[in-house]
Every structure is written in structure tokens, then in C-alpha cells.
Length: 387
Image (cartoon, rainbow, N blue to C red):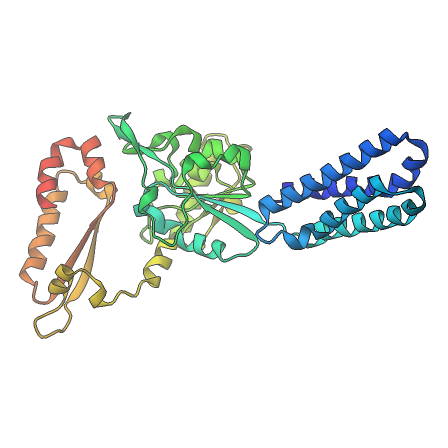
């Protein structure tokens, strides 16, 4: 049960207890109609408390048994002859006290943790954190993939894209329209999209911008969807809405962490935002990237790979060729547009000449084609030929 709901239910139980302890006095001074009305109102309150517990707990019976006994005692009080009322009043007060103690002491308080990925290809930047949280019995976790638009020449174009149906089978996905962040106010929210309205390739709906959702959670956590080289990411990545509005930012250690802190603090000082934004030392955590967790957790067997991959990886005698991963990034393409395709061709030639020994596994950035379409349309045909 969430902390706020636990407080509401506990306060209601204490109200019920105060009423039960006052019944003997009220019975002496109130009219019979007033007394019967009070008993009925107490029964209704006990039922409402029980329903609230049933709505939030997987095994509510252990918490509502005394409430059910209390309802029965309140009913008996309404039917009892005067000579039997004294014992029933004592039993009612004791039952209310037990019900109050069970609710206050035994119902566990749970945190609600919300994960807001958008592109399924970037889910690995949150997955290991979600798996750890999902195993925590003190937390309720929700994975709510959010939709996104394509952006061309700085303008949103086309319909919303939604990829919630493409997540692994063991990841329970909640449809974004079925989770109201403003109403539920989760204890923690994890995001991997730092751009808000500054993304030039794709864009999420405004209600999911970091600057908005931070108002509905105690802790907004941003984990970059990208992995940086040891010297750190581009300076622009260090001071985006995700780093500005998040309470915590989880990054790779050493040089990456140091660059994030250095650039963030410099921008914070330059803009005069020292009161608006927390200093880097209170925000950035050098804990690594879940993307590395994902890679380390994978143990694929050759026979589990597609047959066309097996034919490339295995020599006729069954021995394996060495596999080299080639990652082509958006930044690299934008900064070296005039030469990047020549570099790609060179890489392809190198591996073609050594295909008896080596296998090339080419992994362009998931948004690379959309970036070319939006920002380098003249390259689209040539790039597609390489693909």
C-alpha cells in the first residue's frame, strides 16, 4: 500500500476506534435514532476501510478479518437488548483496537516506481534497474512505454509511434493512457530521454517532459540511453532537461562522471541557476550504465541464433570466426557527413577481405535513419545503399 493511502486508511481506523470507545457514553445521552445512525455510519466506515485494503493488497484477508468482526459486533449492538449491551460495547472497543493495530503495524508500505521508456531499442538503458526493483517486495513497479513523434526540420510530423507491444514477454507493460502520473504521483520515476522539446529527430508528448513530470514524484531519475567513451559525452549532453530537472542522474564513472559534473556546474554558474538547480555533487551518481548490465547478462548459444547468422559465424569445420561489433553513432554522422560513408565503405572492404577470419556485426544507432531523413536528406539514398 502506498504511503499516502496507508496514512488515510490508518487515520480512518483511528476514527473508527475513537467512535467505538465512545459508544458507551453516546448510548446514555443520544436518542435511539441517533445511536442507530451512528452504528450504521461506523459499519459503513469499516466497510470502506476494508475495500481500500482489498484494492491495494494481494492477500487482504489477514488485514480485514477484525474489520469484519467489528461490523458484526456493530450489527449486534443495534439489535441487542439493554442487558446485553455492556459486554458487546466492551467487545466492540477491543475489536476496533485490534483492527487499528493490524492496519497500522502490519500492512506494509510500498513505493511505486514508474519506468518511462519510449523506444524499445533503448529499453536496455533501464532494464537491469527495473529487474532489481521488480524483485523488491517493498515496491510496485510499472513499465509505461510512452509514444513519440517524428521530427523533420524542427517540426513534428506524422502520427504517434507506440512500441509497447514490442517489449520482452517477461516485462509487464501498462498502456500509457491507463496510467495517470498526476493522479498516482509515483515515489520514483526513471527516464532515459533527456531532451524534452530539444530533440531534433523524435519527440515525446509534452506531458512527459522532465520539467513537467518532476512535479508529480519525490524522485526523478535520469539514466542516459547512450554509452560514452572514457573522455565523456558531448558537452551538449551534459546540460539538457534530463540533467537539469532530474533529482539524480546515473552516469558512467571516472572521466564520464567528471565531464558531466564539470560541464553541468559551468553551465549552471553561467546561467545564474545556482538556486534553481542542485550542484553536480548532489545530483550525479557514478554508478555505471545498465546497458553494460544487459551485455554481461547475455549468454547466447550459437544454435539459438538465426541460421543465416550461424552460417556466417561458423566455418565449414565448425570452428568460430571472431565477431567484431561496429557501432555507427548519430554524432559521428552529423560531424563528419562528407566523409562518414567513405569510412563505412572502408570498414566493409576490410572485413570482406578477411571474411574467412572475421565477422562484422554492424549496429547503426536506432535513430540514425530518421536523423538522416530529418537533418541530412541528401545522404539518404547513399546510406540506404550501404544498409
